[in-house]
Length: 462
Image 1: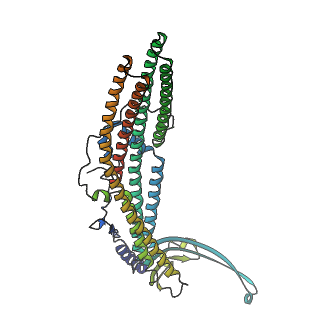
Image 2: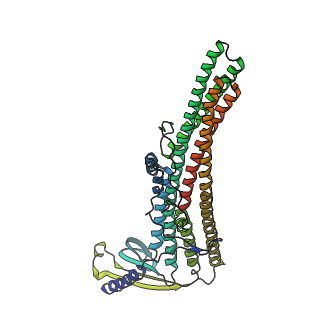
């Protein structure tokens, strides 16, 4: 028994030495993309860039709190994290195949036999055995190592999926919060406009009673006041819907009870010029796509080695006796040591089909990776182009809103002095309300586009 224990210890030590060599991580893949001079290569993903750091640029503390709350309570994020844990377990399983398996067994049996040459006498036998066994597939060609590398790459992809979802959740919360603020400002604008028309209507009714204005003026003003109240009510409905959408993202009951009495933040910081492509390369969704490509390539390599011979070592040691009490007695020790080499000579094309399948799946992942990379650059270019357009549009709309407001004040003064008719006054107020509403919408559009830019870049500008 001591001899076998020595042999078994030597084999196990050699196994751990060989299998214990860390599986070299599959390096990020680089691909050629049209319009880019150098090959696009991803940086190793890390958590140094928090998913919500970019949101601090808006200077809205409420937004930062909402994002933190959503990241704690989002149900989809919990599912993604659970999936990452499952993939991690699968990677550990694939890694365990590179090490020897050790088992301990206890077997007891009793048997009765009849022998005719002994006048059919019954003979009972009893046997007991205690064995410690080991089995190991020697990874001669690196097939198991490649399979483990594929599992590790899939784990990195799942972890990147979690990071990508966190970034997406932060973006969704920011967009939803700004939609709430826009809806709130639109509703308050509608209420102010309705109140202004009600004051004008009260003045016209007093003047009508004194015969100073016609019934047409009064009825046109009543109609516009009613229309203004309807618009305010519609905006109230939109505000409540926006609040409920935000509350769902926060994991709250959609009661539309969120307070929103603050203005949309102003964008005072311009986008830095000459943003490097390395900012796009840190996007976690791109890193996840690249890691899945790396996993497919490693799995393809593993499948390509299935046809090579496999070397398996097995060994066992223990005791056997017809008395249970003797199982711990070394005088009854037994041991065995065996090795076998086997290879497939004919499998009806299964091995070739497995290699073809793995190769095709790797080509699918490569195409998806290239498509994701090009899509990322498209998102960046669209956001950058819209950035300058929306900045100019905001400036022009703000000027139009200012001038229409002044025109409304002037129109009311001129109407009271009889210089213009009621239609000119009501038209001036309608234009003032529309331009003010348009300005609020464009301010939100610019905020939404800035969020899209941060998402496209994978985080902050730095």
